[in-house]
Length: 94
Image 1 (cartoon, rainbow, N blue to C red):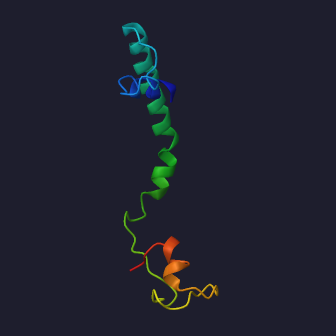
Image 2 (image 1 turned 45 degrees about the vertical axis):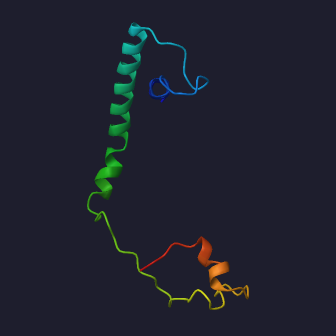
């Protein structure tokens, strides 16, 4: 990851984020290290990708409990309106 970060921040507008200037020989070494590292990462996650290959990319999300209106009391029992309690932090299911 260090070679990737060094090359990524090389032209950062913030001078404190920039690494020291990299000579051409060192740059080539960084690129070789980065390519080898990316190949290793790709191979490491290959079994995971194969295991997930049969799952469709987009599964619809369905709510299992009845829909709660925004102005109804929150089902968690707090006594507050649903829109000010749990609805503010929950995802929307269609």
